[in-house]
Image 1: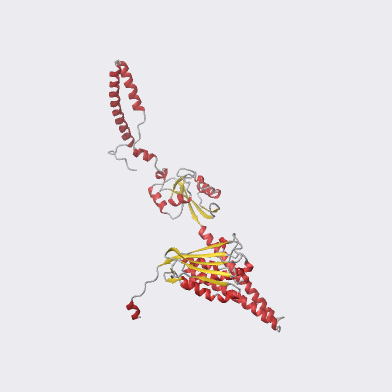
Image 2: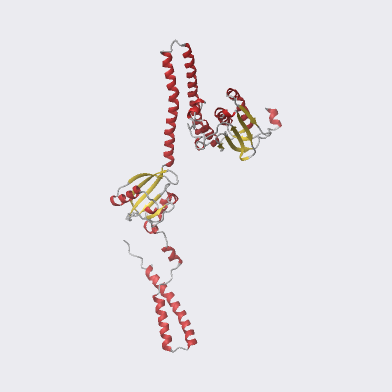
Length: 437
């Protein structure tokens, strides 16, 4: 250790000198006030001397008022004195919620991420005030007593379901600093949800493919065995096999389309596309299907073109899925209306598909765009659905910064509204450019 600098005044003596100077000026003011009081009251010299002595003693003994700098230092974060500025700076630079605790579990410091994750956390309070997870608190005690790190995973149900991983480890602050506990939190919600989605997707896809495959294998065995020479059974079985193979092919096509859309979900299309011709072409293409099911497709198009920025093939897929759903599931109403409305600006272009079928139960509405979700599984399979049509439409519209609104009441049909950002019409090419082309 090096000796202290003799030219540097002691901090305590400096405060004492400042206090004496203040007391001196106060005594001068008191003396002047007492002189005026004695003159006014005509007190004797003994009474005046006693009054002056009493006030002087009270002035010297009373604590001096703190300066603003001293008051600020007294209110400073207690972690500043224990953790140190460099540690606090590193703490703020960490990407996740991180806290520094003393061995008793009292919060010494935390970064901004921890403040956002635990809104009630305060320096100087026990961590149990803000984090009421018994496993984590037990890990903090264990790290303090046994100097052993721990990893704890827990979940929260309110206000939303979340999965969190807590890393607890003992640490020393500075080379010879006091012992501390570092508590780092990691949010695993997105990872767990992705895993759950992947598992559900694989299970649903396997189930959807297993059923037609089992049918195909069963009919093939029948045709190779008992029905080998039965022409009527062979024709009937072959038709069923063709239907099941078509269903598998459609399911695989939908899965591939969904995969392609997800790969470029972050790239927004910028080509100019007119909506009215898409609606007209889809209605004409699905006309034979609608006629077979006794459904009329009525198309209402605006007089002025409605332009959007998007991928033409993907938008055709959206309109096909919506109109085909209306024909298949709303055929009891005998009609499907397709309308295009629009203008320029955010969500100004609209495409509405309305059917007059049995409608959709309220409990099914929020889940219609989930992969493989079908309110009536039997009716969907009989109609040839894969359970991916609306999921595809939703992913395509998300890529186009659009929205899909589904409205329905039982017995009154369903209404599907697609909204997209309207775009200005393309500028005509110069006359010279047309001639040159």
